[in-house]
Image (cartoon, rainbow, N blue to C red; front, top):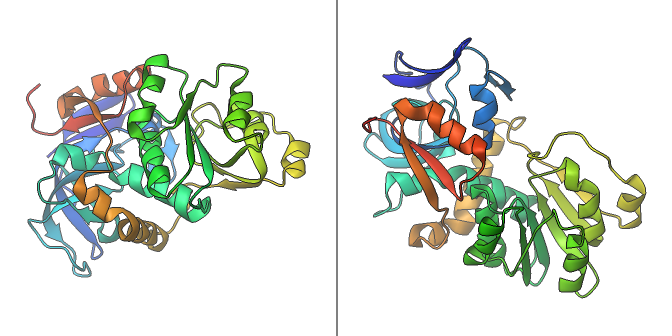
Amino acid sequence: MKAAVVTDGGLEVREVPAPSPKANEILVRVRAASLNRADLAVAAGHQHGAIGGPGTTPGLEWAGEIAEVGAEVQGLRPGDRVMCSGSSGYAEYAVTDYGRAAPIPAGMSFETATTLPIALQTMHDAIVTNARLQPGESILIQGASSGVGLMGLQIARRCGAAIVIGTSTNPDRRARLSEFGATLALDTGDPSWTDQVREATGGRGVDVIIDQVSAPVANANMRAAAVLGRIVNVGRLGGVKGEFDYDLHALKRISYIGVTFRTRSIEEVREINRKMRADLWEEVTSGELRVPIDRTFPLDKVTEALAYMRANQHFGKILLIPGQGS
């Protein structure tokens, strides 16, 4: 099969043996794969949790048809159309734990399906499980124009948030956040953005912040938060280290929660997927929850696809299509 492989000279598409599923895994013929920010680091040879280094194939989510199932797999069989999270999705075939797969609703394309797993799992876990967002509360999502951020806006509205604030430093992308549920869109490059949050919330600050940016906005987040606010850190696009005002954190009695999938057991990830499906699958099936597709590339053009993501001009997801002509 063809797969994108990390080498000492960079990422190359090569012929490699197809993987074999373990007892708890499914083998999927990949019809479409989505790019995620973490893939940039993996493609550059860096470690991301348990994956990384020479010989690694990037790719955290994909959609396709099950080709083979392991002996312990429950509820899935060859021929089923599935969307998956896992690793090594930039290939013609990929394996994952069966608990990380979900059936593709009838009528949904592989291209649409591959945009959903990471966004749904990440934001349901952040907003519902960790932030405990309640109907009538306010929420702010940093980096809301990413695929995961756009899903977060929609899940927040579905949960009954009264005020949904999204941020983006790009004016064109910021102007589109209302299409996905934002009641207010802000530019964190504007020094007054925290004042605008307080004004929108009647002076009390926002109840929940889902932060995908981190270092450069950490203290401003706390200024924008309400007393007893909850901040869930899901991403570090702006850097992993920065200043932190411990006194402000204490004064507002903020709950600051860090989350990642990298240190979770497979049982924990299965449970995240199960909870998400229990809460959101009707909206997924109906197409109510969606992430737009910005552009598609054939697998052979994976380096161009990653360069396009690195340029940070896209809105929504970038896809790779195995078997598509170059």
